[in-house]
Structure formats: structure tokens, C-alpha cells
Length: 114
Length: 115
Image (cartoon, rainbow over all chains, first blue to last red; front, side, top):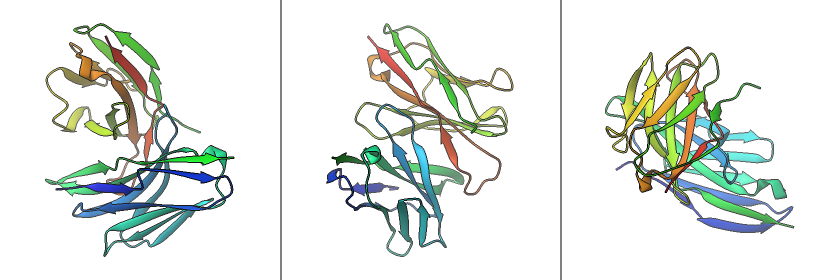
């Protein structure tokens, strides 16, 4: 069964600290992996898209890693800011019965406190 | 910066009523999607639309749901007879040409409350 599991479910950190969010997936065949940031009550906004051949991709203070062998990805946030408080969703694109499909994780809710 | 726009931002309706949620995808995009997110739960796929027809739909997208692209800009989701469990945030998304890694752009969502 195609699944995307994220951990932790929620996380509280102090402003300025770093954190790492995890994503494990079991989808096959893999196409790409995306990380989205979703502010409360808003639509998801893309942070990174990683293909099979990419191990690391950065977008400002966000750095995503991908290990296609172990089917794991992480999102590292450096020097967190209050505005980083949001849900971070891991989404894996794969083929399903000949069609491209996206499987969403449940997200990690990050709260950055002053 | 181009964006996906959705209206209304919030709609309250009575159970059994018809609801139409509207979306204006990014102008040069070719693939369109509807997703929903029940409060506190994960985003769920409803339907994808390409070349003026549904290309894929989930089991959630039953006969009560329909989509339409009535003109060159709007993409609508209709719920024919709403149920309490249809209460959710509905997101429209669009993607440009290319089957590969095209980025998916989401709208801000339409919150539907069914009473």
C-alpha cells in the first residue's frame, strides 16, 4: 500500500533553533518527493521538489534531503523564525495503475516560540 | 507572481443544498486538481482534470461531485447535495505542461461548512 509517514506529529522549538522533520515513504514506483508548507487555514506552498537522483536541495533556510534507497527524506530548518510556524507536508509522486498520483503525509505541525 | 485563486473563501450551507466552488488556475497551466482537507486531517485527492475531461478521481469523488471548465479560465467543483461530512477545506491546484516534476500550485482554499 502506498503510504507516506511523517514524524514527529508536532514539534515546538524556540526561535533561532534548528529542527529536522522526517518523512518515510513506501510508494512505488517513485517519481519525486515534495515538501510543502501550509500555514493554518491556507493552501500548501511548495518548498522543494526532489527527483530520484537528487540527494539534497535547499531553499533559503530550508534544506531537504532524500535517500531513495531507504525511502526517507528530511526537511531541515535552520535558524527558525516565528513565521516558520506551520504544518509541513511531505508529498510523494508515483505511478499508480499507469497514472501519476500524489500521496500526502499527515504533516508535522511546527510551532516556533519566542 | 501568478497564483491560483478560489472563491468563495468560506461558504456555509444547509445539508442537501448544492454548492459550487470556483477556481481560476494559473493561466498557462494545463492540469487542474481538487483536493479537500477535513479539519485536522491530511490533504486528500479528489479529482484531476486535463484536456477538458477528468483524468483521475478518487473514491471520495462520487456521483454527488462534478467538475467543469466552463470557459478558458474557470474550473469549478460542484457538490450536488451536500452532506455534513462534506464540511472541509477544498483546495484547487494547477500544474503546467510536462508529465514529470511540474510544480503544483495550490489556491488558498474554500472552507465549506455544512449545517
